[in-house]
Length: 241
Image (cartoon, one colour):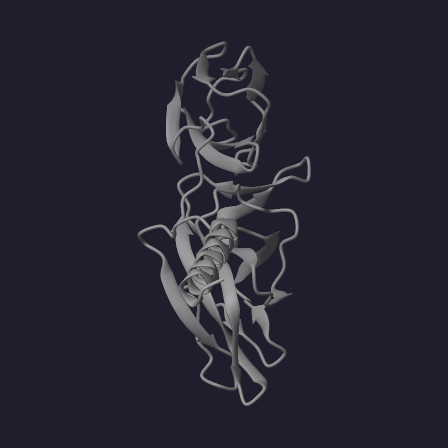
């Protein structure tokens, strides 16, 4: 076998290996608004992730006091299309290369009577992906992190603080079309909740006035109705006048 043929076979094998390795990398393209951050831990600069006040501590864990963070687990990249993960919320979690994390403003989350967590419709959260550790002299001093701001799907819910309508007389009703399998509750009012009957049937929410408006003893004023669809919630307003 001559030298030229040996070199040719070697180059062909090299190209084949390169093609296979590149094809195995199924990481999706990063979204256009992706930010790549060299997050140094608290002893080497204490870099914060966006406006979340999340940083990496001495133990090389993500830490946040004013927010919640969720470790989603292994992921394909920062642009992975995944739902908000609200089942394992915490304030501190290990920084693991290859994992996706979601960071939520605690003021946008609530617990429903069923025990399910939900994030407010139209509220954003951070989705982050740990690319690798940052190592200096065999010491881990931080991590390379990519992150984006995400707005979840509204799941067919109306806008936050949407006004359903006004009730003036006993027996008067307002309705709101909604998706299936919702959960709802009427927030306690200064005038109490007596006087409003809330029911759900055939993908419609019905609010009926069962007591005459009373500016002193109620019902009177604006009532907040919380509605959840999967892991998204909204608040709609009903006016009793």
